[in-house]
Length: 44
Image (cartoon, rainbow, N blue to C red; front, top):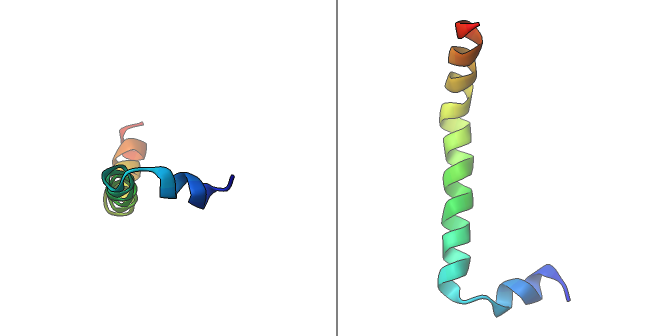
């Protein structure tokens, strides 16, 4: 049983929730990650 079989067995809404969640995390890390690190390092 490979990953695609598992994904195929999931309902569509679960798949889209995962996709949206992953994209949100990636975009948040890309946009806010660098600024967050700068602020955090400056505070020390």
